Amino acid sequence: MSVLLIAEVLEGQLNKDSTAKALTAAVQLGDVDVLCASSGCGDAASELAALQGVAKVLCANDASYEYAIAEPMAALIVSLADKYEHIVFPATTSGKNIAPRVAALLDVMVISEVMEIKGADEFVRPIYAGNAIQTVTTADAKKVMTIRTASFDNAADGGSAAIEEIAAVACDTPVAWVSNEVQKSDRPELTSSSVIVSGGRGVGSEEDFKLIEALADKLGAAVGASRAAVDAGFAPNDQQVGQTGKIVAPQLYIAVGISGAIQHLAGMKDSKVIVAINKDEDAPIFQVADYGLVADLFDAVPEMTAALE
Amino acid sequence: MKILVPVKRVIDYSVKARVKSDQSGVELNNVKMSINPFDEIAVEEAIRMKEAGTASEIVVVSIGVEKSQETLRTALAMGADRAILIKAADTVDTDIEPLAVAKLLAKVTEEEAPGMVILGKQAIDNDMNATGQMLSALLGWSQVTYASKITVDGDTLNVTREVDAGLQNITAKLPAVITADLRLNEPRYVKLPNIMKAKKKPMDIKTPEDYGVDVSPRLTITSVVEPPARAAGIKVESVTELMDKLKNEAGVLS
Image 1 (cartoon, chains in turn yellow, orange):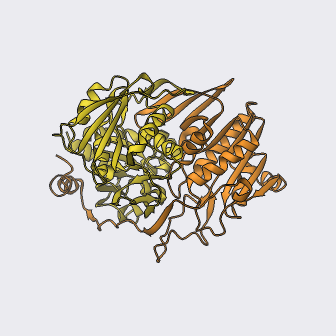
Image 2 (cartoon, rainbow over the protein chains, first blue to last red):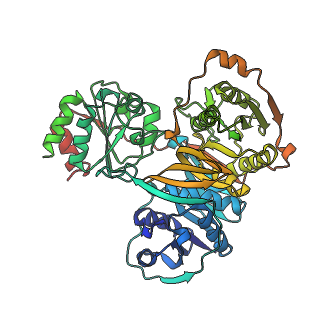
């Protein structure tokens, strides 16, 4: 039996990064067909066909798939499910929205945020925001799962899979897209940025958070914040990194004036390189930091920013 | 309109989860337990809808061990009207999977006939992020996940959703299943007199058998281990040394 990978295609645009990483996981399970469902997904389908490891691209071109609304997407995927043992999504907000719906319609459990594939029915996934790692086996005939993209490398280009047009499945959905409010900031998005500079309570005020932003801009980084900084009003909610905020795993995470509460560590400790700048040498953040600098952030951060000029 | 709010009893978010030495799971005995933070946000949203006159009654339901009553009492103290406990586990180590939870909630929904179900987007223990989507599928109700703003306009919901790229606005017809994201609201603090009052609010106690639902798990947990520890880091003496290490040792700065 083969694998059906659901590509993330929103408004005709392929999210190549997350899809190519999920593909690296999917090829470990068998021959991979990729579903490209969107309105006008021709370019996305061609990009997918060029990824190494894709056996075939199934292209469903219909307006009802343009915003990946869960109801029509799940109806389409369920209609294809007979031929596949594994149905795999990238663990993006879109994938995590649709996968459990597909699983319930097939009467199987969903396996969320898979970080390692041990066999056709054995998977490793984080629980408690990554504070514990669980291995599960499933007895379900079909395995529906989302892939934690930070755990897999990108599949390479260089493939030449066939593209097969498939029919849309009629679905009378009670949900309709209205508009997007994409963040106006020129900075990269927090969960996909390769560098993040985060500020904590130690930054002291909303005004002084500009120091964090200035360093981030020099690094081309996203700006994050601890829950303490968000609760104190220094930074907006959508910048919160932690167990109840965003879970991030960039190449470089710079924690400034962050003590390192469990809540916060749960959201960033999978980062490749962690830098901590804090004047309290006993701060718990230093226990997870690759490079710790015991210093006053009001001296150290402007110095770093200047050094990057 | 009646609103149904499912809530889960989980380890308090401020407590570090500790893996048991036999690798069977996370230590849950003698650990502070609380309402799942995202479910608390769902309860708050339902109460605000009642205060605004959109909702008439709030029923909270929890599925788990007997002690989940405490979680339900928290929701009642916040302002929910009555509670249903479905006693589905004898020990705190038995976690009922989202598929089974969704099946039970579908039965409760048929009985209670609410106009909407609001629940947290995920529980902070198993991080499955699945129950709301599954319930929506089983009921055939509008699926509205990761809500950060909800307004009700007749039989239509206007919802702002948190998605990877930012925010997305959608409309959804009622009835609907809505999952609450972090930014939907800030839950109120419970006042002592309300805790006392909550003790007198009605609570039905049921079992999965009452609803004819099989809650046996589909997944077998073969091990639970600590995540790999990070290699010990070093302290640097200056910004200059830090920048040098990031460029030449870690290779993360060009």
